[in-house]
Image 1: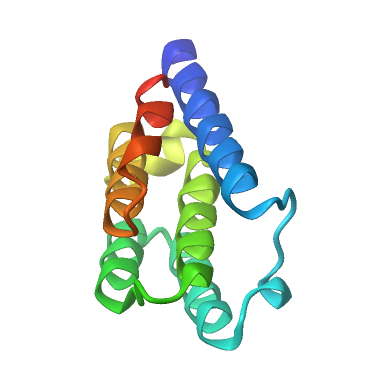
Image 2: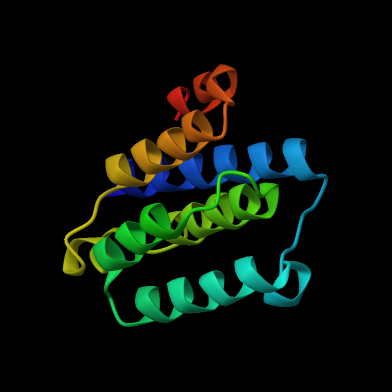
Length: 123
């Protein structure tokens, strides 16, 4: 349990650090995104709140606009938010810390930031 909590904190810190490195932002609000990303992020948060994390992740990848860097910022924040959930909340949603890490890595790869994936491998 403590090991899983430690892993979740590490993943959260790594994603947060990547987001700050790429976008020079610390705190994010829905209002800080352009309209398409804000709309998607609002839906993602709603799905997280209802324990539908797999559905949220599928929606994220299905609707991702790789030509808009706002969507990268939104996707990283999505995984950062997931990493803030408890291991129990993730388990109830049939999701894991490894899936958070893999999803964030996939997002970086899709947007061409393969070289930054090593940051997440440190978690």
